[in-house]
Image (cartoon, rainbow, N blue to C red; front, side, top):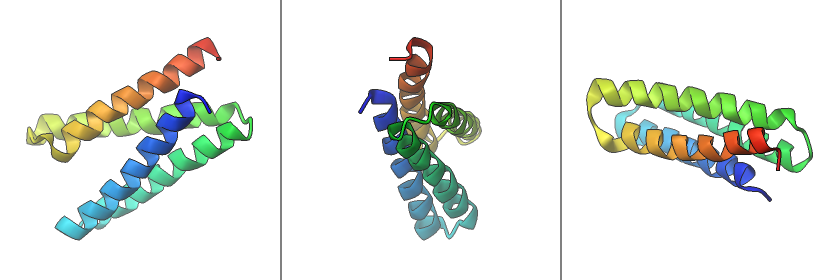
Length: 106
C-alpha cells in the first residue's frame, strides 16, 4: 500500500472523527455532514486505489484540496489553530503525498 492510499485513509478518518466531534461539541450539523461526506469520499478513494482504479487518486486530491482550502479560509478568519490549523497542516501533508503519487505514478 503506497503513501497516497494511507494519506487518503488517514485524512478521511480524521475528517469523519472531526465532523462527529464538531457535532458533539458545538451541535453543528454542518460539521457532521461535511466531515462524514468528505471523510467517506476519501476512504472510498483509498479503497478504490487499492482496487486499481487510477481515477480514485484524482478524487482523493480534489476532496483533500477542497478541505485544505476550506480549513485555510477558516483559519484566516478565526485565527484559532484548533481545528482549522491542524486540519490545514495535515491536509497539506496528505495532499503532498497524493500529488507526488499523481506526478511520479509510483
